[in-house]
Image 1: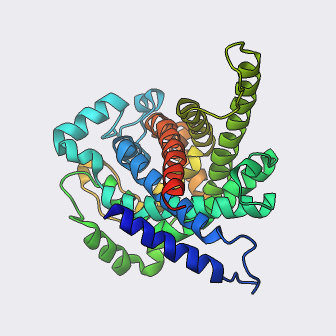
Image 2 (image 1 turned 180 degrees about the horizontal axis):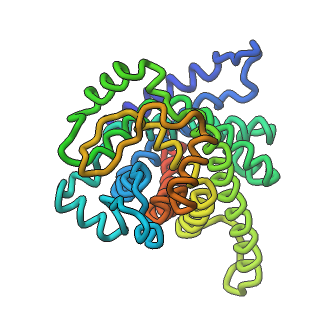
Length: 357
């Protein structure tokens, strides 16, 4: 059955790729471009789903920290009458497990998957298209020769396209993951209706501006540093294997472990640089929404005029530490998330390419 389906998909893709016409009205310069886009989108969706499932607990913990208005820094707690519900990674993990059970760590996971699958599908498909345009070829070996700044630009453009296409699911994920117990919104539908009723359709895009401002450096750094680390690793492999007497056929190809390390490093770097913008985005996403009092003060509707006002208010009321709330679980999550995403993408892409050609 699986082979039959793959044969049908292969036939359809091959047929359509010959007839596909791009916006400019000219035929595609390579007959396999549509197939390549399908492979990139499919592999990206698989990679995103796997990464999302693996790192969901850390994401839930991160969100609980980020939407919490009360100070969490040790020095700030001494002078404050406000006591945070969540403070410390291990204590927060224990509290969520005790109050909400194991399922609490996957709260909001359905809209998260609905967000991340189209997000990574669009992201990797656009990334390959932009790189193909810049390199003048759709071959991966030619993409590896692109200059570093083109890798950063390609990643930024891919991130922007993916963000716009999947943002409402990201917002719903944040709302559901931040509410705790007892639930204010029992499911995604109730959260969706509440947001539309209180803030209109535009409420589904609350925080989009800081998100786009965040995603440009974040996606640029993530893909740019990943490509950079891959180049360094390939150079290392070539030199090491060529100098090894046991190697008769030196190769610069990377192992799955090396790809994992490259993804780990790129995820860490991009998250450390862009975390404050992610905090502001989360505040915009939950402003005006109900939350049980035991979780502390809620973000009032229209609390922040814009991204810069949000950054300023957080800085004044919560200090520099406020801009880095949730940085520990965020970084712990970003590193394996980046690693898992890139390795899963590379493996899934190879599998789809082998079975659809």
